[in-house]
Length: 297
Image (cartoon, rainbow, N blue to C red; front, side):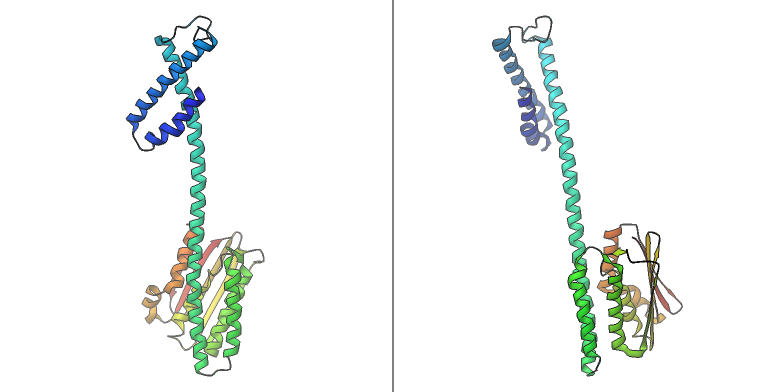
């Protein structure tokens, strides 16, 4: 009888009234159910077990007396309260896990969407470079196509993973730099340094290139000679990425206001991936534009 009372409360009264915030109807309905529970329980004991409706007691207990009604009601309320508490706790744990899973799925979906935005952006820029070489009928065009195919292989296959080896990402960046060098020739000079052992370092794919793209986007247009310095440094449990390029002060407003889709997406990805556990600084000093990014490994 107690089990029936509990299940009626959990699966009938609770969802019908409590979840809809009809508290007064719930109290009236629960009181009615308690009355039915009391009558059936008392009559079954009286007819099937013993005329003493309270066989647990040493002394006889009259049916429908105030004390007997109070004790049975309190027993029913105790059973209902205990089991309902357990049920609500279990539901809360389940709902919390479901919410966390949904948040992870949403995060993963948004990150993938941001990556798909970055990839066409990069290929658009690279195809423009290839188009410029084809117009000039340059002998560098075949080499550029080969480099572009290597980059496409990286983007289509390796970049699908949530994290990849930093060495692969650096090789990807190196291919991009060679593409730019093929396009601009001797007017582009770059240096890429690695400090520390990065063999076991994994990073999100396509995270650093937009900053390097930005160098060429705002540097070569204003300077006859482009110098780019890129540095990766592992210090304990942190990876420090920095890039700087020569920069014309007259285009400072352009760099600050028109970073393009690449930089905007990287900032959003950093926020999603690391919350507040990263540091990104950009500044202009004399004729150099600098970017410094710290992320946990």
